[in-house]
Image (cartoon, rainbow, N blue to C red; front, side, top):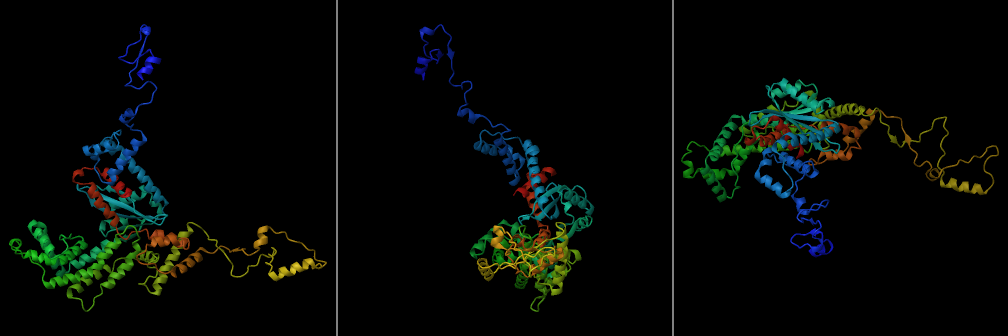
Length: 608
């Protein structure tokens, strides 16, 4: 390069080289080769070293992804200031500058919330019917919140369960204040346009009062899981059962308090080849935790007894009383009776398949299982009687019962209504017919059905009849007459009708008749009669999948299905938010503002 410059560009001083004497009097240019020439492209080093503009698409995408990371992984806003996180981002993209924590709090997360809310509103708008659930909880900061979730069947026949809001309630939790919260939420999320909106809640008196003060919330479905919990709690309060539970609780509490006893228990489990499970401490307000405690005690009773016989363990627990053989037998019988209730509670907590249609069949199943037999012990008879007494009067309100009966009939797993006689089935399907006609009338005033007539239909008198399709023999005779003398009478002028190619080929073979408009009620009744003759699908099948494949066969009933089967049987979806919110409003984030709690819970549950 230097040789080329000396030979052809002698006026350039390349530094350290001698300028020829022939041009010493002229002006020379000094070039610094460490800097780019004017108008030239930047080198690779400068491109890598430069920072991404904050308004660039790549910087915006990274910032948005960090916001999604904060929401989905329930990270605090301060994570963007952590040294380890900043180093990770710098390694992945050295040119990116992480915005401040305040920027994420005031700009990024609210924008994510608004975009996601817009999508949820669009999905709700496309739904034909929406139901809601609600429940309340208190955070670590003793802040009271009310969560509302929506439920509907999408156009693709999928269950949708978006969390709408988790808002603070600073006033007293009276029925009136809760009613105001529900009414405001229905308006904000544009759900009030659906008219009657089904709601599922627990049996608390304040929420029951709130629903009664909201005319648009109907029907009111009491949480079936909570109902089972109340009935089972009655069973746990039977005197003999309460005494046994008290003894088991004291044993379990001892092992939870004593690290030495817990260590010996693990050793005994290994020696006896038992599962290395810890003992379960129950929560008095949740019957299934009491069931789990008893079941675990039965599983580990050999290891528990062996541990309590160790001198070092036993010396400080002389007052601890274990279960006798008779008590163990009673616990085994009680867990056997209560096991179906535990299984039913698990089934009813599903959010992917319809559950409201299961309430009445499962209620009948429980009542049948709680029937007393001669071989039952005194304890089991008392347990069964307590459950039956609490459960038999549930869901007997006429409007709620009718809604549940019709929901069960629209579930292809239970369309035969096996717990009904023929008169009861007729009443249920008659009610469905009336509702299907009313629902379809909003969309269309009449249904015109194109059918093949059973008998040839005659045309109107003023219209000439269509010619019959000639048979093979007629065609042969026609061919013979064409070659013979004139076959027409002299006084009948022969007029040959000119046919198109399609008419010549098909004739009347594909002629159909459009009957006069059939009454909508007749169409619905026909659908219901055909639906009743269908075979029930397996209990493990998803009824929404069946309706997705048969919507075209039962279009009027399909309109009702989205209204009925989209209603949840429990308020579990709202209660599940409490666990998520508890992780968000942790001890380190107890000062999180209610608005940020609402944003983070909404993004976490909706974007998951």
